Length: 177
Length: 158
Image (spheres, rainbow over the protein chains, first blue to last red):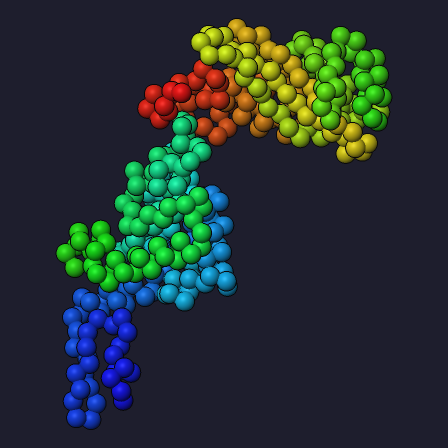
């Protein structure tokens, strides 16, 4: 076994060679974060045109399953990450909050596109639009764009994974992991 | 029927109608008082047979700083049988915008008129269920699509 093959890419820890094999040395918290970050199932939730890009990322061409966002779940109870893809209006606000509350811990939030970040480039100056989804639920990663390209969403998803691996998401800091 | 034939036919039914042919479809201006009887004729006449109301909305022409609303009701009709279309417009009384409902002629008008009621504050006379459609409770009388609508919490005044 060469040195190169021996090094486990991305895995937090090292392999200590002993006669007849090896043992993995790591911290349990790091392993848990590594495992969680590689199996983030998003919630099927989209309120505007960003949802179309989201579907594109879920589809065969971009395919976020490659990075562990295996399947979009239709129930918040089975989802780990909610991607806010689109405008949130005042009537949608309580629904979004409820969905977030129904998700099991640990849970993560991505605000996708200008509407979810700040109310949007078009409809912000109205009676009905929430000026940024972070008025309702805490956001871990923001993706700029209107709508963002599929590559941008993929980048955001991978950024979220890195954030989880480093223990830097809001949830992790709060719970002290 | 083409627009010219429609115009002749409608002039027979309602001599006071004013026509505007600048667009693709024939535009007919009627007064709110003529509207209900004219609408019944549009629906029931054998040669017109406008059985499909595909758009019902309202326009607010109010200029800034004007107190009274300046509203126009707009109805788009087509006939699924003859494939002809018309647009009917009606300028509303600015101090008290109200017009007869057509929800008993075209069922779809029921919801469309409720939307115009909540957004523009037009009172549809004899409507069977005139209450808010999309807006949450507590929005009665606020009419967010009016030009003079103000919401200092959510909106920047431009």
